[in-house]
Amino acid sequence: MWRTCSVLWAIAGLLQASDALSTTGLVVTSKSLVDPSLVRVVDGVAYRLDPACKRDRFGGRVTEPQLPPGWEMLTGQLTQATAGEGSLLEVKVGIRKGRTVYVKGLKPGQYRDEDWIDDAFCYVGTQRYESIGAGTRTVMAFDYGTEPTAAQLAQFEEQELAKSTVVLKPLLAPKSWTDPSLLRIVNGVVYDLKPECDRTARGLDPRPPWEVLTGRIIQARLGEGSLLMVERGKRRGHTVYVKGPDHGKWLDGARINDAFCYIGAHRYEAGSGKLLTAAAFDYGAKPTAAQLAQLEEQQRLQSEQLAEKKRLEELRKKEDQDARTLEFLQGRAKQGSAAAACSLGIRYLKGDGVPVDTDLARKWLSTAAAGGNVEASNILATLQK
Image 1 (cartoon, rainbow, N blue to C red):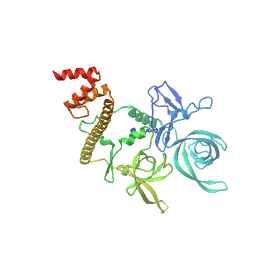
Image 2 (image 1 turned 45 degrees about the vertical axis):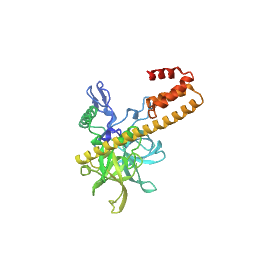
Image 3 (image 1 turned 90 degrees about the vertical axis):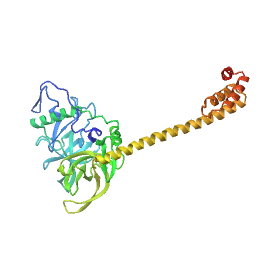
Image 4 (image 1 turned 30 degrees about the vertical axis):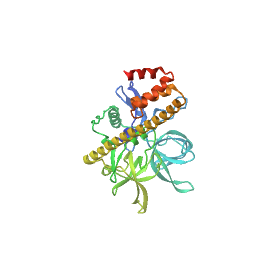
């Protein structure tokens, strides 16, 4: 549900079917939906990258690439090309400018110290390494990814095809006041997430206590919840504690991208045995049929109350406006305005903003007719018949 409100870049967009094209040992046939050269696999998950990740033949880019969650463009020079399974990269451009990061997935033997790197990498956590002259250090770790196998590419294309199929949601019945799929219950409180979905669709953050958490499970089934390493948003780089109905299905490395309700803090035991504290979030539970019926009744009553409040407010405004108009017309009529006297007579005759009073109507209409107002004379003549 939430994934339809917060845009998922992890597996997004379809390329036009093309003629046979051979790239990186794979063939894109006329039936292919994606370009294999833009698909990379990290920890068994396939990602489609933006074509803008590739530079044109002049070494530039037309637009900045739109990357899946967790991916970044890293531009810099290798400072230690063979640090274990990966290499050390000193970033020269972007948000990590001036920092050293650990990158893996580059083809062994293809790069040397001081080689220039400019490509997309997936954030995978942290890496400890032996620094020359500085002992053991810990830095952020990124993975270039691997090319998909034929089986992975076929599975990826099936997923893309399924995502491109539009499934219309059934319309709510006339008596229904809410969409059950957007309701969640946390600590007995029912939340309607539709306003938060609308905010994320406009590029805004959800309102507290709800947040969108995107990241990777690093310790599944820790008590009633799991530990999540956040990869995007204001909690990026933080470890948080999450729980929800799918908690028992989560495995280490599983990717999470959904809305969670902040519920406070949670203490847990780290692998070293040390007790740590992390922000705690709850996915929430779906409402039962009884809870949904109760909520719909509450919303129906609230809707009726708002309609009545609006009606009374409009009535009050009209009464205020009528009072001001009556005061103005009386003042003008006393100053000798025949038109104002005629308007007063008509108001008392019809009960427009004042009680119906034929005597006052005749009085003001007579005053207006005496002042030469033709309309007032005609109305008086009609009343005398």
